[in-house]
Structure formats: structure tokens, C-alpha cells
Length: 331
Image (tube, rainbow, N blue to C red; front, top):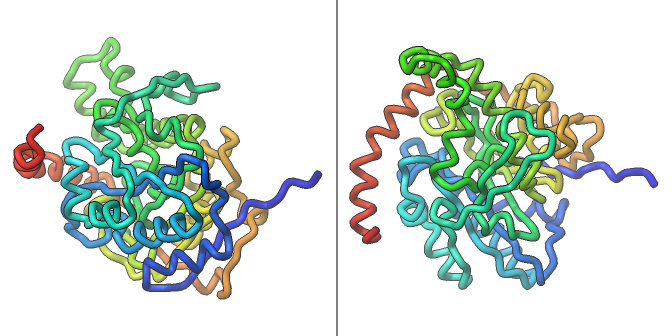
């Protein structure tokens, strides 16, 4: 029996709520009895650029479609250290969505972790993942269309990093154990500024992660995207694109191509494809689009090594803000 091509829908729109037009072409396959997790992307509580986080309108529309199908999903995210996910839910208007539809809202950083072994690991033999995600029957990765200084692009697969508890996220970006093995601290610190080694390590680590918890569906909001200093401090780019697909790797490959990059040049996509996570060859993907794909293709500016330094400084600057959040939530 001939294997069906993965399907990806592309809609030209400036309205993030037009994700509905994509889902109508490539429907969700979740069943009513399934435990569905909508994994959103909130890098930080405050939207400094306006294009860092999954927009509330996108999340609302995805949830609305699921509720119309009789499905009651869980909305989940775990911000990167040291950001407080609950503050991100608050400032990005996610709490009202959960209240409106009577949904559970889960901070994956505070969820119970489950350690899972990785088959044929590239860099990680075991990964500790939030139980909410591990026990999900159907995962929808809802992300932004952005560049990233480690993985070139950050889309539906990279978004799954939020499923790791706080303490485990650092293992995805740096091979600390290898660098400190028989090396001085200063040497390890100097190596932290070598972008290429971390790009390779992170791409392999995310591929390992997604081989354990592969999302079932991708929604990529590119109505207004981010280029340059991604994933947090890049410039807004009016892409006018909404992308979704029943094969997240295929959706990421199409999105990467529309950003002006060659999917074959993105190590994360190659590693994920090599682990059997999905399809990345555009010729083997059924693309639903009313426009000519070539007419929609853009030219995104890639991230640079000094963009990572800005990200580290942002973490330092967010510490006082998160101390306030701890008081508000009475940790």
C-alpha cells in the first residue's frame, strides 16, 4: 500500500486567527476521548518585540476548533530559565482563554518529570519530560515563525523544548558534561562562545527529544514573524503566512523554505528526518495553497553569534521581574 504524503496547508493572511482556514484543509485527527495538549510557545512574559510569543488569538482559534469537535484540550508551556511561565500566561492573555473554555492550564516547568530513554541517541541517552506531555494522546505544537541563533529556525519541533522541566532545558543547548570533562572551567567558559558546536549539539538534542515526544500536528503563526536575533530579540517581519500540517517536520520544512532557507541546510531538520520523525523533502509533501508557493517565498535574515549574548543578558535582566512574580504567586 502506497504511503500517503504528509499534508501541509499554507494561507496568506495577516490575521493569526486564519489558522482555521489551514485546519479546514488539513484537519486535526484527534478523537473526543483523546487527551490533547496544545503546546504553545512563550519565550518570555513580556513581548518586547511583539513577535516573540504565540499570540492569544492563535491559541484561542485552535482551542475553539477543538471545542467545536467536542475535545477539551490542555494548554501547556514551560518558559526557559529564569522566566516564570505563569507570568507569561498572564501577560500574554492565556488565562482568559483557559477560563472561557474551562480548560486546564499547565506550567510544564512545575509538572512532574518522567525520564525516558532515547533509542539510537545522537547526544542524549535519557530525557526527563513533563508528565502532561508524555501522557498526551495528541500534541499540537503551536509556535511562531522565527529564526534562532542555535538551530537557524525555531518552529514546531524546537517548540517541544518547552516540555522539559526547567533544570533539564540547559542540557539542550550546551554539552556541559563533555566540556567540563578533563577541561578547566575557563576553557569550558570560552567554548560557550563557539556558536557552531552548540548549533550542532542543540540540533541533535532536539531531534533526540522529538523522537521521544513527536507532536502530531503543527500550527505556525507567521502573520508577523521574526528574523535576525531570534528567538527573542529579532526584528518583526511581515510575512503574512499561516502554516499548519499533520507532519510537523514537513510543516517546518515548508516554513523554512518560505523563509528563504534551504531545508537541507538546517541541521535540525536533517537530524529529525534521519531519526524517522517525518518528511522534509518538499517533493514528497502535499502542499495545499491557493497561491504559488514561489510567490510567497521571503528572505529572512539569519541570527548571529552576538545574538546569543543578547539572550544571556536578557536572562540576567529578567531576574528582578521574576522575583516579583514569585511574590505574586506566593511560591
